[in-house]
Length: 150
Image 1: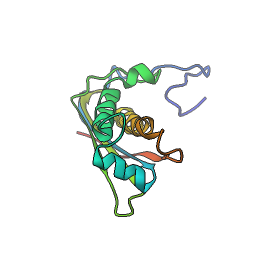
Image 2: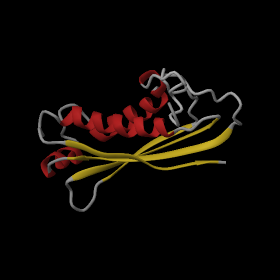
Image 3: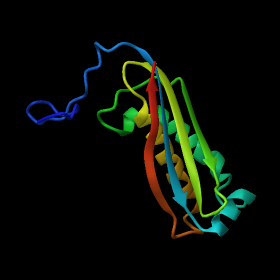
């Protein structure tokens, strides 16, 4: 069945065997956006959101999610994350929040799923905390932007 590492010769799902791979320092970065109304952004920045500090909650949720990725994605290896961070940028257009996440580890397998999960969860947290005031929010463009190992 192919080049898909999570599928065996019979087409069944499998966890990739990384036993023979060396432990390496690995880092992955991901990004995504949540598009929202300027008024919603004003509410977030002023600290007036009914559910509290939106970006602080989203940052913590993203970091926590990175550490729990294997509990969410069935075939991901459980990894002892050594560092995870989530950052936010508001462009001059003031129509979105750009979310970036970095995850680091010393392991036999990559950490891009953890970075992607951090971005996704941070975006979902912003959505959840602001859905009462903005029904048009959109989470978009979530992708891995870099991954390295040494």
